[in-house]
Image (cartoon, rainbow, N blue to C red; front, side, top):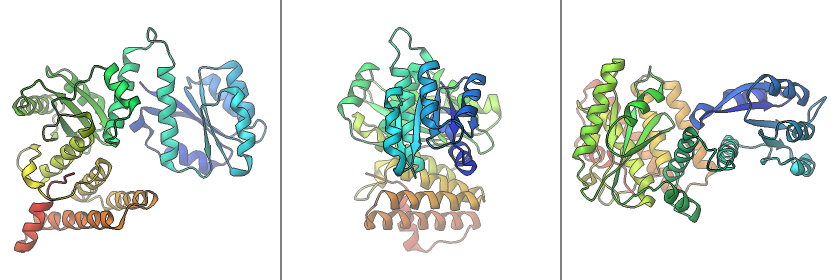
Amino acid sequence: MIFNLLIVDDEAPIRKGLSEYIKWEDYDCKVVATANNGEDAITKINENDINIVLTDVKMPLLDGIGLAKYIHENRPDIAVIILSGYSEFEYARSAIQYHVSQYLLKPASKDQVIAAVKEVCEKIVTSKSNTRIKESELAFLKDQLFQQLTDSNVIDEEKQKKIDSFNLDFSHFYVAAFQLPKDFNEFSKLKDIIKDQQIESHCFRYNNIVLTAYFCDQNSYIGPIVEDCKEIEYLFQEQYGKQLDIGISAHHSTAKHFSKAASEAITALSLNFYSASHIIAFSRDYIANRNIFPVDISVRLHEYETAILQLNFKAAKDVISTLFSNLQSNFTDEASVKNICTQIYLISYRLVMSTYNLPMDEKYVKMLTESLIFSN
């Protein structure tokens, strides 16, 4: 399910930033229009199928409160998120009578904007009665749950209710990470192939990777998972003439380990760069007495490694910049930052050695071997 966004702000740089500098497609959203004031926004609402309006408060002709009032009276199916400065925040709160979904205080970070939109998307679907929820909307809610499980290992009461409502059994499961080739961005085609397989699973997009949860019976043998991945790899190659890379986690037996399993799968995926095989399974033999990074860090490191391999140094620089901005905003402790810096160095060293076939110093071989897999 795709949610259509309308961005409303009288400042062109803010409109451009909100509409172009967030990869909305990663969150099942699409910016279908922008407007520079409330009156312009009403015109765009009447011309487009809009689900969510993200609007400033202070604007000429018709401000954000007036726009919220119009939407409440004429298009109550549209959700409204208000962005306001500190001085106008109490005024913005007066729009509560118009059922505004979210209020964000400027300057809001990109993560805060994304989180607000994701929460509103979920509310739009869950506000419908069960008889009206479509299959595509149920799939969206299930994707949202798996996104939450990937981002955090905390299983609170709300997550557990969702797990139970979808009849998900995490007693025995693996996670596989699928990496599309760089010139192929049609994630839905890969997901269609995965969904057509016989093994019970659920696939969803996580950043630029497709993650798939494979649910097993009491026999936790990885063999059927590997065979399924081989079949997916073959079908993708046959249909599109392109090569997939696949990483598979170790076996896990509780929902709170889903984030760890996803990190393992992404790490195994990175090892495809140094193997003739395109399917790599994670091994716990690598991880004794070592620390693991959260899945979001594993994804960033994988993106950095991919960018360097593709000689896309601007992308690599952007990944590192984003990574350290997140570390700073999250007040990450010094020891963790040092471990991440060490991993970046080892990735870079490994890439140089493998690219130019240079002999490695024995002490670095040992370091690289120990760092190939991130653990918990």
